[in-house]
Length: 248
Image (cartoon, rainbow, N blue to C red):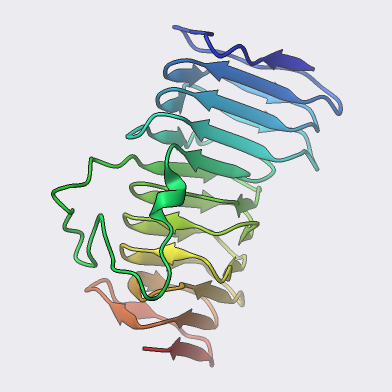
């Protein structure tokens, strides 16, 4: 077990975390943190920082490992985990300071960024989330309160365990696997791009209106939202079923 969670920790150089077995790993930094190449066991992995979370090498979890929680407590901080050798068992939780304020119901006005990408002048610059997992690992989005853009690239199925709230653009890319983002509280403000291959269905839900970006998939597409529009990216959907359920 590795537990380095004192709130005043301040790691200047890259931090590598290595253990084995069913032992949890957690680390806290009062400021930004840089993760070095790390290999952990089947326990959970938690990283909390007062600034951006970035990395210099791949982070590898053992098979059937616990959830990954990446938390930033300062507004405007990025979470960038996109090393080509990443083998996280899933992208567990991405949480940001104040993310609950980003949640909106169907009757509330859009704020922060409109469908064309223009930012409200009263809103601060928002951070990005980028998670890339290759070559064989699924990605699981859980309580993703991305303030900026969200990019998820996986070598397996893309699913979710909680609502995704993203004020910028979103991109979900995998190979011959399904993409299932059907939490009823999802709220994608910017354009959503979706890519997969083969006979694998793509399903996405938005509590408000949704704008589709570039969609290039191998099979069926199902979209449920209050309203459905698209940008100039175009839709390539060869499957026999294209279900678009707009309630507005």
